[in-house]
Length: 301
Image (cartoon, rainbow, N blue to C red):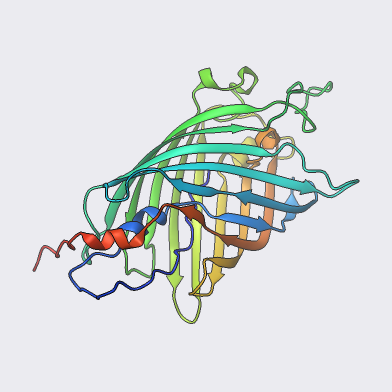
């Protein structure tokens, strides 16, 4: 799943000397986008085979100088499911490495949102070498090969102190047909639009956040084996996270429905409740460097 779901912010140590004219939000703007890792215990309502757990490991490595008005992140993401059954097998993990560049032009001010942008390239495969189709013509979920690649562009708006809709994004995801398995053409849905937002967030007594992501899949998709294409074409994710203010790990509950995001399993519609833990695995993000730039005053001052 190409997620545009952002991570909970890490507590930042105070600077040596507080300065009201210094901006301490620059690192937060970029880090707000980064996808969290999670361990979930899904309750399948429709379409999902019984699982022991699902996990996503999403380390984010910053590989550009920290004082630039740009950031480049290498993210070797892996999603895997352990299925209930004999020997509790882990079937066809999703390997989803990506490279994402972020750009911004000014610092956050109190009277308007901070805007930043990203462009990325990503890969999605399952490391299998078997035939895509089983003998009966269905997807070969046991060892069928799946591979696609994507390009994406996104715009983000952040209201630093807002309680409602403090973070929002619009993203375009494109899977060019010439860099994907030929068997996927006309069945996967090669253009996707994602709308994501933080519906509300609170900081007392615990840090909590309700976020939502709505996706529209444009282009031809394969009819799910258990639903009409319309329902698979508009995936929805609702997620509520709670964590203590001093650590970057929290608990969450989520609901997802839409096309299955687990590589070759996209031939089905799933509806699932998730309960689990999530946190941010990131390195190279230095919040203190943001404090070296003067804060832009509001226009009316």
